[in-house]
Figure (tube, rainbow, N blue to C red):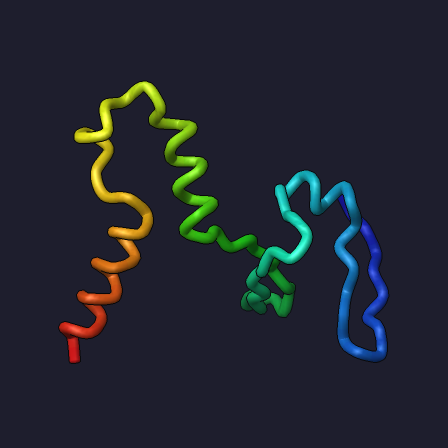
Amino acid sequence: MKYTSTITSKGTITIAAPLRKALGFKSGQKVSLTLDKNRQVVIGGGTTVDDFEKLRDEITKKIPSHKKGLTGQALKEAAAKAWVADY
């Protein structure tokens, strides 16, 4: 798929609806923009902890909770503690 967008005077770009749908982007969602070595912009969608947990729950609904491992919030807290412990 190839689409053309125009940058507005405020620097905003509209992502065509078929691309948003294919990527699963929702209104208000944050995306990351990266410039690769060929000066091409790569757009990636972020995942919130809430979105992660909803998807995880859907995928693992038949697995007993004691075998699922850490929740998204617990992972976030563990990462924060590890980051602080490094300093």
